[in-house]
Length: 103
Image 1 (spheres, rainbow, N blue to C red):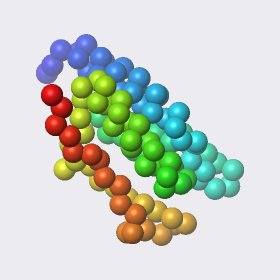
Image 2: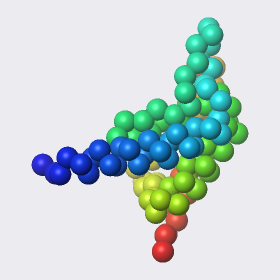
Image 3: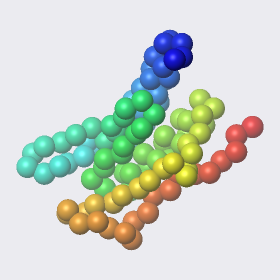
């Protein structure tokens, strides 16, 4: 059991980073007139939902830059990517989280 304020501060900090990052992509079109924000998050799990590959790549670059500013980093071994186009898995598209060593 940890100190409760730590989790609250973490979620608040992540919310600021994610809100700043989601401005580079438009809401994802799910079809049938249904749209969803490009970022979904729960604690330290984040999902990027974009309608276009270039928006997803811009989102990753933006999130990485914001994480760098906050002196945080991703763990690439814990990151996964999945590209679905028109209901089919597209294995040709691969998204990677940069591996950086911050000083």
